[in-house]
Image (cartoon, rainbow, N blue to C red; front, side):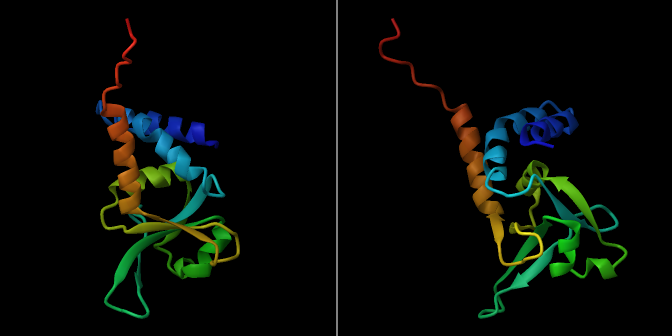
Length: 157
């Protein structure tokens, strides 16, 4: 599914609350801009039996007190075994997810510090990490641009 179709799917499947479809439309340019930096249009995300995304807590080797919580996004189903032992746990399953849907979810995933996209099948060395705080700032900038009034040209008359 191309990025335009992914955005339309997000809009179509958004809750009919009068806010979410408009929000998706408003931040669509940011979602697409980041998705275009990635190599794949969809990734596998590990989910538990309840359908929640599986978080991995990473510790800093030099300073074990520093931790971050990440979600891995895998380019192929085979790549899940490169990092995860999910294949050994029947409660964990990989679910293919369009990239714009992953990005949209990141906005609201409070316990998540970042999503790590594995970009090259079969390798763990080429990744793209998207920090939730950085992504939220981009979204806020996008929304701010839409809200700010457009300047009136001085020669309008």
